[in-house]
Length: 344
Image (cartoon, rainbow, N blue to C red; front, top):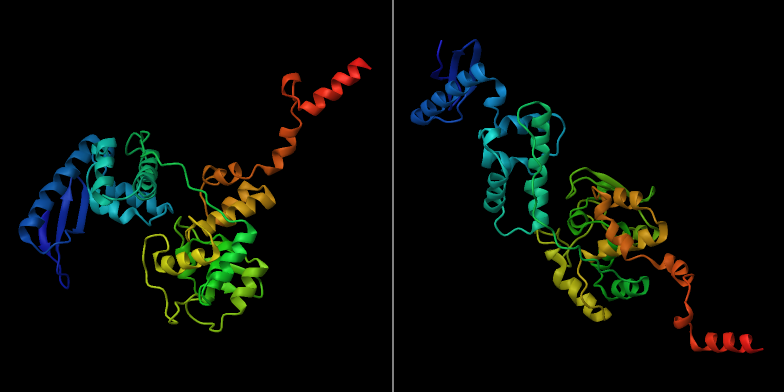
């Protein structure tokens, strides 16, 4: 029988019930408006007819693909906004133009890195899953070009000056940032339950890149944390003893105090997130291990940590010194010695 709009006891929403070419339907319209529900009925019935005639691929929607992706364990952090935008739009109707339009609409003032992380990467992952399920042909998605990453880091001596210049409530936080590579948000919302000082270990449960990760604690970080008096709730508190308020702008909650400490320490052009760059630079200089650095820092690809290798080339100095001078390039003293040797 064709679909009908019906009421269900105990639910404010109207439902669709019936059978279309052998497909049984009993689902909510998610609305209590009769006209809207009727429009949904007509659209749903047409979709089922088309699917029965032309196959699932002809009518597969973005919502279906997103569900397949998440049921397979895909990262869901940014999927909700994309589903709200694309909804039941057919996959075959989504191309580069529609993806670019979605990025501009959802995040009009976002930087390329944000757009790639929150729009292009999850959409690409969803479409790949849909392609594996034979719901759509996958196509390579063009992404906004990101500028070269900024790498500003301190020497250990400069780091000491910065820590000494910090206010008492901020000093342990800065030590923690410099010696764990934590993102500012990961540190500011860290709870004592995530720390094990005896084991010298911290667990970051909610991270920018999604999966939780654990990081061993450096002795200096353990010492700084051990000197904090309270042992419940947020680890780091403001100078008034309050938790830091949420603010998604790269450490905006501590910018003023951090800038003051940098000024007193005589350090220029250094921001809270640069503590993470400092840790990564130190780690690579000490270990030459991109894989380990990537895992501990929560980066998803070696490409993202290669920049720390590029600024750590001191270990290659010997290979440069070993290059031949050539006669015209030899220092004057060496040329004079060679000339005397030839005469004598």
